[in-house]
Image 1 (tube, each protein chain N blue to C red):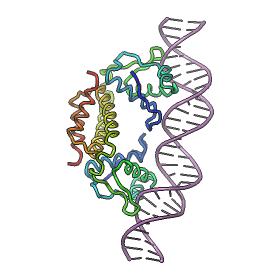
Image 2 (tube, chains in turn blue, green, cyan, orange):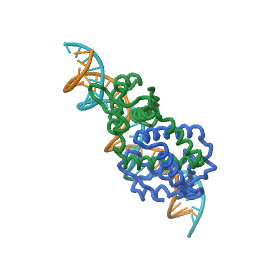
Image 3 (cartoon, rainbow over the protein chains, first blue to last red):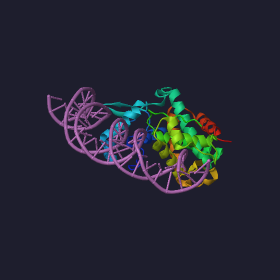
Length: 128
Length: 128
DNA sequence: TTTTTGTATTATGAGTTATAATACAAGCAA
DNA sequence: TTGCTTGTATTATAACTCATAATACAAAAA
């Protein structure tokens, strides 16, 4: 799994790493039970500090996407272990973000069908 | 238009204001040609500094959503004045965000239809 | 003239982000 | 045992962002 990180952008590096890994899991680049790169490996690969990677892993862990073990490293959790964990709060967050994206799309001139097509094809890109 | 601002959250206040106003325009709470509250008005209403509101307005202005005039205040622009302004870059940004939302939705157990329904109903909430 | 508009300036405080350089506990392999 | 690797913790530091306070300004309307 190759992570695209923008060093000069506004989004913190550890958040970008988190986002890229979530996408990677969604797309099936890494599956449940598989290991993520070690913090030192990824840090060296990206040319950043190990603690920055660790912070990303802690975030993923707090959200239930991975487990970490001092010995085994960081392991991806199964979807079934995740469902319902934050059901209510997550749904609110999702709806709020979709509301914002919808508003922007509308104002930029996209019509409903174009917007929905984009949503559908984004979801289609996820693991089968 | 009432703005819901979370003072303790991670998202900067001026970004929250920007987001709420974009939603407000999309939903038709404020229409093209109408005035936004003055910076002093909104600042006092929210109990924050005028410069924080000004920063939000500058952001909206730089994105083409509003125009500001020392005299007339901040005025909402029409959709037609906005279309195609950043077409390419905007589309990439939107697709990237939808990719992330799709991945999270998938991992939280939503199926494709549920996700698309949420997208559709979010867009439906926008101005007719 | 007075008021109101968005904006600019300057200084300040608090918090976040990322780094460097170490160090630790835990488990595995030799 | 000894050595290695794992994620994590610590401490100090630098740079940057966010938000504030207190003013001030140019421009146009009342």
